[in-house]
Image (cartoon, rainbow, N blue to C red):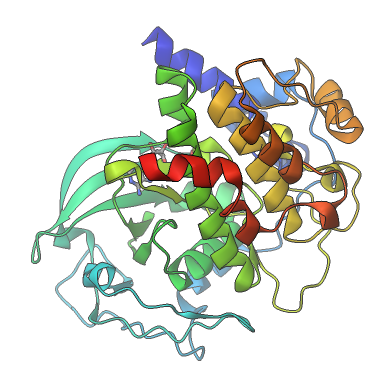
Length: 387
Ligand SMILES: Nc1ncnc2c1ncn2[C@@H]1O[C@H](COP(=O)(O)OP(=O)(O)OP(=O)(O)O)[C@@H](O)[C@H]1O
């Protein structure tokens, strides 16, 4: 219990910047701090939000037009025609069977191409699932392990309260999460099979990852040895390479957003801050998590997909030492160390791991190692036979 609450308070420090800004902007705009969840309040008390305030432009009605977002785009969803389904107004969900039929559905050249052709697209409602144990709680709802009654397929169901989504003005993020996550098919990216909604909630039907969050594993078991860490880094490099080739930047890599499945297969999740950048324009939105921010993000310079490569460097360091490299008591000190490139290694870090981290954490984005070269780095190649 005590262990869990310690993890929770450590996590709060690492909330994504836009989550913090979102909460602050809500407080300023609505003068309504009473509605801020206690965990978020703690974050606001201890941490001054930085950078631009995130402003949501979506109206509450827009949330429900999320269901129309794919219309005319070639997305192969079906509208629910089940008149007996009382709790589902509208459902368009990809069949979980798609998991067994991997298809690459995004164009490397032109970003997301939402010409999805699921093997079996079908309407769904909550009635289609047996609800199992609660897997966790997020900002806007809960995640359950569920079983699709008809097929026996086990998946994770994220149930988000519509009132919370509207209250926090995060329609845009949820919509982006749905669009990007369902368009990507890679063994190290958590699959989103589809979504539906009823009067009160929006439900995301996702691939179930049996061993939960990498962050919790690190906090309960301590740092990873080089064999396991290199396996994880390889998988993340491959997933990011896949996303970047499709012009998608994740922008919030951290152990909290990585889930562990069978045989130490890990999957990146939480695409709420991802962006599809088909014309490779430089981005300016400040987002990410304090410890994982690159110098160009901190200095509010334009940036590109190299911010994910920096974050992979921070992740590699955290996996083998159990702390991010620039962690300090205050955000200002952390920022200072990031910008100065003040990187220190404990004795325990092997020279090969050190070499890779130094190549990932290059100050200038263009000097950072390419993801394809990460996969061939000596640290990876030496450990690979033991995976
Ligand atoms: N696909 C999944 N398979 C297994 N467990 C999951 C899955 N998705 C989420 N979980 C568990 O549920 C918890 C809550 O997930 P959720 O994504 O709602 O919260 P979160 O990570 O705080 O994200 P957000 O910041 O978007 O609310 C996670 O910490 C994880 O343990």
